[in-house]
Length: 637
Image (cartoon, rainbow, N blue to C red; front, side):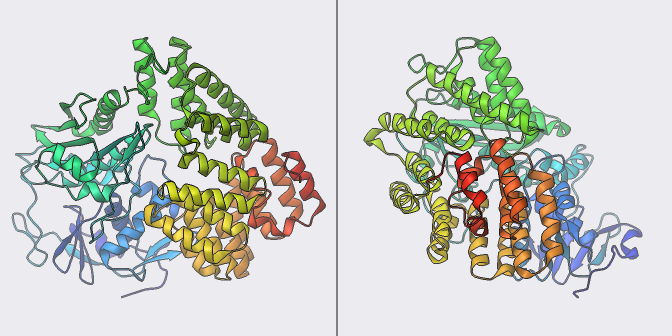
């Protein structure tokens, strides 16, 4: 039965000992942390189960996104994109494709629009007659099992689910062949060897976590989750699996328990023979899972990362170090870095990299990684002054790293982006593009063309940008060039081509926040703000808030637009103030728009590079102050 907004839970659920709930033909067993539908057990990730349980316990009440992020990923900083993705998967598993059970309250959160029926715990020793649930494991035999059951709900504090698409019924497309010098690695699903098959959820989480961490390693292409998952329980020779997947590196292993400890056996195979294969066993108590994960990642990083083209010593390229303490410290930094949108991870990693450089001031890898983090999202900064100082340090780090190791074209492209996006140094940016081209076979690569197209668009040369972007797509359809191509078509007002190319991008990157934001803008330009609000649920926090400001303004809901705008300012004023200015520009509040964009330019906000072609600024372009803004970043005609 669907119901309007009202408080919950039903007092009946707070009496006695219930084992879970029933909603129509869906049963939720809170003891076994599992969900079934019409008697069939459903495959649900632990974050999804935690979210479903909290929605059921608070049925009828709108739950804010911040609250649900704390429930699904306790103690971990993740984007709202993770929440939208988890809710989408939850709806798919429950057969709620029309979002009638788990309803979106746009801009705020979600609520469960049904009355759950309590399922009561049967007498001791008996299984539930109507649900078919298995009896609980014998706690005398597995004394650590109660802690593990709690862990299955809370382990998302250390497990980051991969941003891959759900497993399709049809075979997924093969991972594209790697560029020369780039290894391809597949992390196969870790096997559950426990007698009661109680570690399957944990094994799946470990596999996803390892896959996510390896994505940070340079010159390494990751086989996507959908392809790897098909090999669950496949006991064939790793070399044969590697050939089928187009990979040379295979990671596999299994989870089991030894007395009151959890054991993980992890193996690395290299069909090319360049990296020494190994099999290692790791054991920790159930409450030490974060340390166990760190052990696994460190072991993989030490063997795979300690190679030329990555983080290892290479006397020819000058990237490595002969100082063992410096190398250990650098590897700790590489393990610590949890992503470019986690402020605490950024701060910790910067501090550890500085320690590595104190031990070896000529450690090129450390300089380049430090420059990359300081020149990234900038969320480590608490003030505009700290952000500007970080940008300056980023360029200095890249300068030092490139001077020590001048052969890698990607480092020139990264410095080119920093020069233009943070200091609007067009001449320096072009010089680095030319330096990268001189070090690239054939003078072109997908990465080089993607950045060149972005730079051309920033200079107002949209048609040239689209032509260069098309060459990047032709070289590598998976390069991400389609996302930028959609943005550039939007600059021309061509929503038809923008939508077509962005939908193709979603086939490779279904959860890409930029692509979903640009698609929402297509909806807005086509006067479909409600469709835009639905699409924005799959974007990042930044773009969801920005898009909500615009969509609610188009719907005529000033109050909702103001709420989203205030949240946007609250969370992103320092590193992303340009988008606050863009929101004001869309609403026609040009004084505020100019104020925020001027502030963004002073603070080195990289998005100011969109100023010349950003389709959100249409109402600002006839204002005489617009030319002054262009002049401030050397983009006047």
